[in-house]
Length: 292
Image 1 (cartoon, one colour):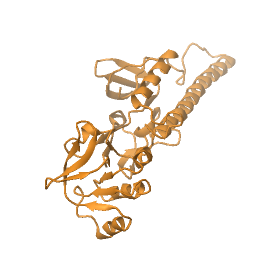
Image 2 (tube, rainbow, N blue to C red; image 1 turned 90 degrees about the vertical axis):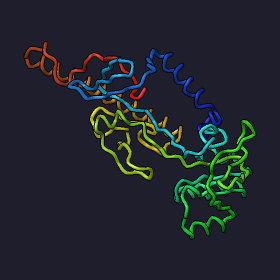
Image 3 (cartoon, one colour; image 1 turned 60 degrees about the vertical axis):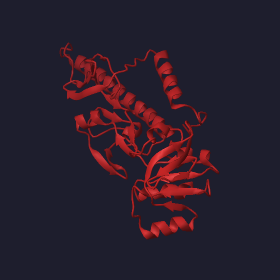
Image 4 (spheres, one colour; image 1 turned 90 degrees about the horizontal axis):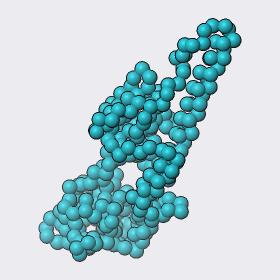
């Protein structure tokens, strides 16, 4: 995990463990289960998990992120996060001076090679997944000293643990130290789809639309992190969670204040005050994060 102030190079698994500890330290409840069904009710929302737990809430925040789908090349998944990475902003500096392979899955993916050029003068772009590429793109890559390899990649070559190259369809191997792949981003947004939130077009396809505070088009439903922004790196994703938490808390407090004001006005008018108003907050039920 890179680009996180004071945590550069920190293990993502350790970050999650730290988060669990901190949430539980303030009596937060974490349920390790997957939400299968999310629906709106007259009082808010109801979530049903894979293990049969039913949770109700006035609002829900979906922070389920994305899944990276890699090309079906033997050994690629096993090296994911080690010899195979995807983001020049996350792992470009760590690849300084190394033999870099760029496994392009689209013409747009060729741009990664240009982004990495400042870190190394030994870059090979493997274009077998997108051949033929436009001649103009090829010429610019070669002008910048980037080798274009058109033969299809069939497998990852290792010394038993460390990536050492990419095997090609003709039986040869191109030595590389690190591979920048071009995975497809798949949003884990089933709860949002079930609730019918609006989507917007992005460079990676349709995505959940949110306002700057994380509100979706469905009142009471919020989305943060990569569930709302496919380009968000870890600091941006975490920051969006903090922004949404503040906005949501403000709405909850405003609702409670409005309910109290309604009761005061009712009492002042002499009308019976033993009937809840529509804005009266319900007793908070158990909650689980959508998506588990």
